[in-house]
Image 1 (cartoon, chains in turn green, red):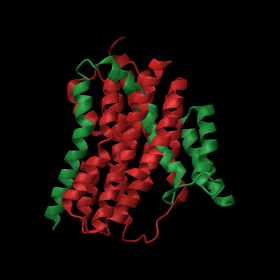
Image 2 (image 1 turned 180 degrees about the vertical axis):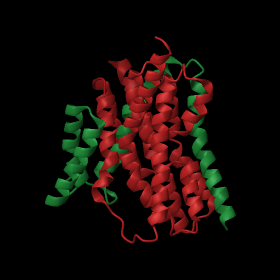
Image 3 (image 1 turned 30 degrees about the vertical axis):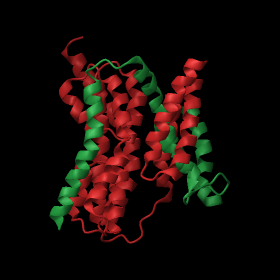
Length: 106
Length: 234
């Protein structure tokens, strides 16, 4: 029984490691076309927005843009804090504080 | 620029890299502990639960695997799902390669192992400002986060027997808050804002169209390509 799961963990490890390892290992050593570099420069903000948007706009499986969505409410002052402080630590701590406030009052 | 200078600079690189991993670790603690506790309810042995954190090191796909095991899924679909869920790292790995042109080749496979949503976000934000030791910086930052993940899931396994209802609600906001600040730091001009908004909208739309985190990779690629097209059009 555990043997089957051992194979599962090995399989999961391989399919996770290969996409992580191959591009950084190969592309670091070759000249990347300019067009690809221009696309990759947008990947940073785009991927963060893609990760963030479902976390704050979707609540219980539906798009929720209302005052009931405390994650969306907390995101607003968190964005302002991020913009003003540019500090990861301050933003994360105050972000949790804002969520706590909204959880308490709503 | 003697030997001492380099030792000092190594020390400062390690110190600042560890510091930048702290918010990631804070976000991993509740997720890792939840993963450990939840995984105990499957047939996985405690060794394999922690082993998965050590060898796979991918939070969302580990939680999905646990979910699928609870639903009696077979091993092959779980591996396939893991592959699809983690395919987005290809984009991050390709983007980070821009910073490691001068990093020693033997470090690159290790750097690759440590690429996650979080280490990518912190790395892609902070690496452009580092002129030297970028490889070491990313390794220390990524490895600190990795240790945070492995130890958190170990704690989850150890306390799982005693905890029935485990929930700290505000901690859920650590990773979204971290994505917010990293997004703000990465925005250099108006076109970055436009691309981010397009990506956010597409990600939410594709979240409902296709399961398994595909929304992230589709929205990112489409938004980045649209950004380049818009740049050329203006």
